[in-house]
Length: 93
Length: 59
Length: 351
Image (cartoon, rainbow over all chains, first blue to last red; front, side, top):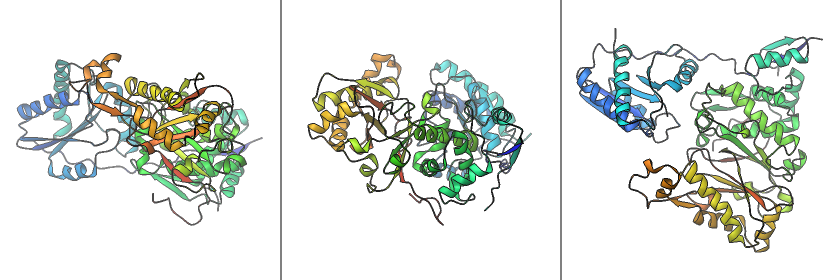
């Protein structure tokens, strides 16, 4: 005997986001790094910063560490984003 | 540019989709970072830089 | 008000099982097929319209409605009388300080511990005695399971998806305990956390797996509690050194010694706050020398303050056993306590 059962999921499709436009070059740019501060990130981002400067001509690299590595970036970090030409962040253990 | 270690690629793909960016491209580096030597971290950074051009710049 | 969830026609019970399993809508166990009548009955009992917004998961801005929670509650085996607890638990989990997304996605693999207090325990036949943190009774089993199904289906918290737990623990099936308020002189947990004794309440905590202790060889409060403190120190050494909410489950045999000596939950918390501490240098004794970094003498406390300890009177009447339930990862998530009640014409709580 056929019966009807209900969908338990939220059935919603998230609205599509828009990517920030990419610059033609990072020469002289300010690049921000948003780090979760976990073990290993210090060394990784130190090397990355050096390479951003030497290979892409980046002028300044600003490092910001989230106050809680399991939460999104703090509001004050998100506010700072608009002053950077590019941002690097990541997930990993 | 988002950088993911290999073991978090599926998480990144899922999060991109649920946040409205299906197919979002990111850099991939070896896993893990927490116990990696400085030499390995340097190699990982180089791997990320190698992918950075295609992700950060207009082509 | 009509239900708006998409419906699926199935020819029989077995087909319903395979539909839900194939779509990744279960925890691996059989589900109770959520028919419209069963879902409506939950909503009617809780006096909650189906489109009532229970809350929004803050990180991904996902709205959770009463109808969708009721569907998952029915699937878990909840009867209508269990549903108000599910609503309250989810509302509590959605408070910003609980950090639901972090707690449920972390490799750390915690589960959601749910503690029941107040008169509703008796209505639901959840005594909080034998097997208190195992399969103690129908109510705690299905309520805990409903929470897991909500996470799976409404927040995509599936293994390898959002849920990156490396190991996880069995509490992810169901992790719900009722406090044995009738057989203790202590204030119930919800009263300790600021609610009146006559209300029913739910406390949620992002929690690791429980660690049992045993000390049946003393009646001295300090000695009994030292065993609990030692287990907390072990967690700090072996898992995470960071302070957060810890829960202690103290069954009757040990509880009676503490009560006879006049110790209240506050006294217990003060003692534990003082004793559950380690030095960073102890990490070197357990294979973590690499991160001592010249700070061997730095002291770390398991609790930032005594009121971060949740003391729960629960468990069977015999056995010098107790349990320590550690936090997910320090104070990234804070336990939340909310009263149970039908919400009429209101939005999510502001706290």
